[in-house]
Image 1: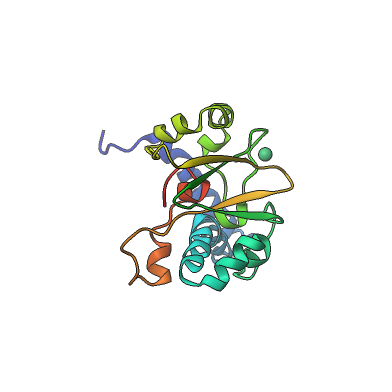
Image 2 (image 1 turned 90 degrees about the vertical axis):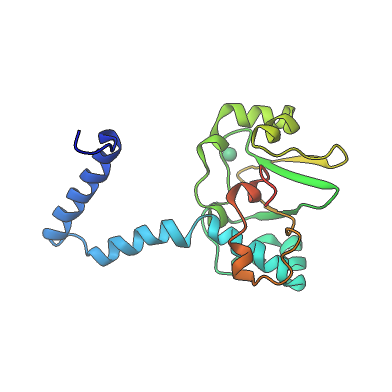
Length: 195
Ligand code: FE
């Protein structure tokens, strides 16, 4: 083997590139349009949006109040809205309370702030177990919470989606909102990680 890449992984990417080249060649699509679509899904949607919301809440108390009172409106105000984001409630993690989100029926998820759900979020095991034994499931994610922290599990529906507002890490007082956003992970906003 001249190189050690997995041909099964390369196959689809090669076919997509070949198809793209063909479509551009035939004048069916504009390569700049394709790039901007890919960029939108990679960068503009997804957990980076949620992280920007979290970082703003950490640095702007008035925004945080608004976010907790009316998540949908406060999130819309940052330009994040649309399908599966019509009704978002934000849950604030505190010293005493840790929130974790699931959709027991299917995979409801706040797309405008988190993008598409990870595979584990859609798995029957996560959906059933996190309700029954949240601490055990969280420990499997590497998150061991002290006994005096209450864990609350929220079941998403088609009507309402949840975003967890993680606790701001200690020692980050001098960080800018942009730097803070870089600390926030997708799992932190689902509740299966601390930040
Ligand atoms: Fe669902």
